[in-house]
Length: 439
Ligand SMILES: [Fe+2]
Image 1 (tube, rainbow, N blue to C red):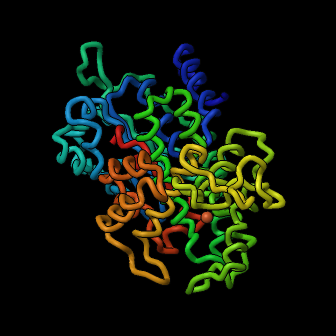
Image 2 (image 1 turned 120 degrees about the vertical axis):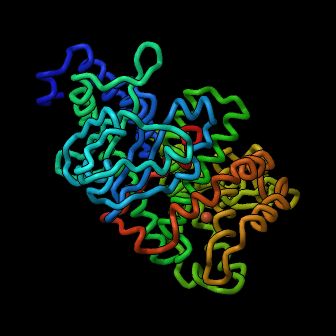
Image 3 (image 1 turned 120 degrees about the horizontal axis):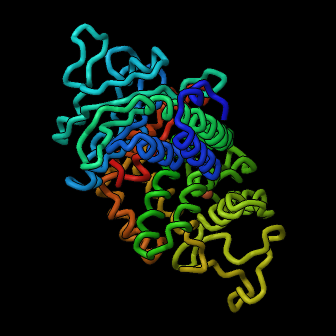
């Protein structure tokens, strides 16, 4: 990459930044990308901790955070309460100051900040965890067209004996240089998420239940459930990485086929009659057809998510073993009357089993035109009752195990239209939700 920073950069460090920056191209998920950017930035500057704040309207929202010390001493959940932490986008904080000024800022001793400085060191998270962000470098993240994503902070560079040391002269250049790579990758991933959410927005025109907020919550929940399930199954790291990179996008598209279902059916308050139900069920086949020519991993996973998300563990779901075009039963998968059987248990892809849990749980805890939201306990009770019937018991177990984070997901993606202005607020990350180990 060309950048003025290269003029003052040590060649070896520039090469390392290039290597890490080029590696970002493999990632399409915004949240995974944010995590990787933070990990890389900390590696390049040998920092113990770091955070990324993204701009959202007039606020900065903590989108990703890592702290090796807290993870080692306190445990990964120590930062969980700060999942949705936000601060004003103004000069009153260090992160806000850098976001407004759009210039890097290096502070080697936060205890000795000039009292006349316009900003203060925000110690809310430090105080809660009995941790001191002593040395801090903050760099704006912006893409070439000038769009400001937010800021990255790397905290407490460590010397050879593990002691906190000041940043060296080259650190600022190397981080700025690397962040150019990061901003390009982020822009690409955010565009992809943005396009995906716009598809959900189109569905919501016909079906008020399918809001962008709902699909983002379902994506988040799905990732949580997959992480737990994959860890328990000891799925190899590279496979987990492959799936976590694409599952959120696939999950957001699970009901894309509803675009073709008439609005009067989608919004009918009472029970659907048989004919209407068949039309409604078509949304699975129509959506799956869009992705059946699998050119990429994302195509294939999206296809599986769409096709299987209304199957049930006990075989009573739909569409079952039918031809995608004709809806005729597939040979070898019929009952005594020649009717297509439903897929059951592990005949259903794990992604479909996960989506079923995430989708229904979110419907239970959300406000709908026909019901008030159920509280978390009642919703989990209902999900548990359906374990082994509607849902895969292992996935329900994952939902229960992830209970501490469920409310955070709801808070992060509320059903308020103003929070989802696609033009301004779309690139809202959920990295801490998906990866609580770093929180
Ligand atoms: Fe659906």
